[in-house]
Length: 274
Image (cartoon, rainbow, N blue to C red; front, side):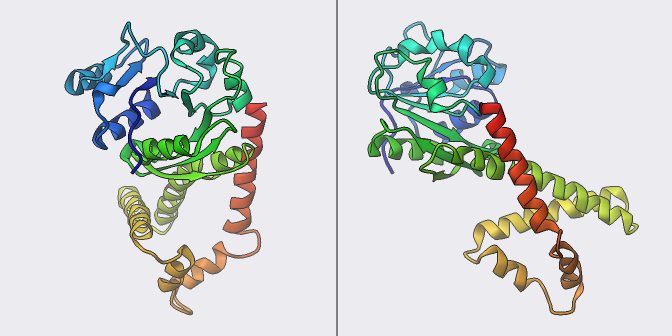
């Protein structure tokens, strides 16, 4: 594993920033090398700082940190920029998890002597909060191989990491994995409602649906088999599962509907970033 950076500043420690911070601490990152900037720290963040000893809103935050991770709300970028600009030197790696903020947007708010932006755009998803997320990343031209590896090390603490080589593909990442957990949660809701329609009590249907999805997800996580193979393994010819799949896989069924949904999310991501 690539080493952790000698100095890291986390700007914003809300849900996603806090999840990454907890992942770093659990992964063995020396808290003495971490500074967290959050103007309104939650009680849980204050307690975490007391427990681990990382610096919370220090007066002497690094003036040229090795890595600065931006995890504030995208709409707060202009307001927050003056508070972190001084921490960014010519070789500082900036990792941004700000949805919709492009490399150009970020570069415009960095010190003007930073001629070649060392910026990584990262799109994590909600399961990062339980260490089972996945993050899609894009590196600007100024990012070195070592800095890409360092980014992978940092983000691997909360799940998998995938790289894309075209910044526009971050919008596709957003539509697949960024928004994807909501699609799965909706599937649980729909499966539970379908169970109710067959006469199951609502609470029983809800538990069956939830445990079915989480169990299938864990099987997918642990198995080396493809999703298609796993699906085939549970489908007996002419059986009950096959009857249901005939509906879901019919023309205009789940496959085309998912393509349409993901494309709608991608188009909205493009609109928001424009």
